[in-house]
Length: 121
Image (cartoon, rainbow, N blue to C red):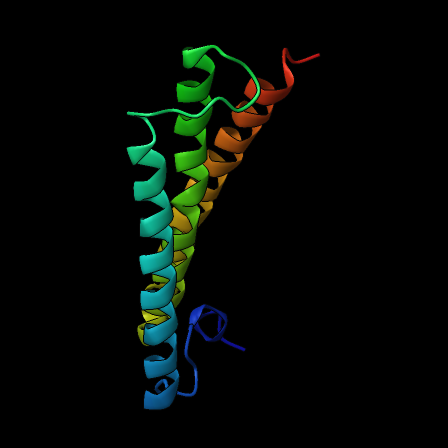
């Protein structure tokens, strides 16, 4: 048994069907457009922040900046999945970058919870 057999990502040499790439591309475009719309809505509310829980302007700006890090997780996953589907040979590299951003998004979500709920224990 060769070690290279385990490292080969696409051992059969088959390519992705065209219909799968087209369907995935459509859903990537939908997810990108919706997440960019949500992102621009959050960025436009920096000018006119709404009072969420406190009347402190710094709280609102701080919590929204952490939300942007979480919102950007959707395009990151969508693009990574599409690239891995179209070109499986670089899927491991894309997965490493995705996991790094996932750690950052979890940090942003934790900081957002701390900003909303108060001091950490």
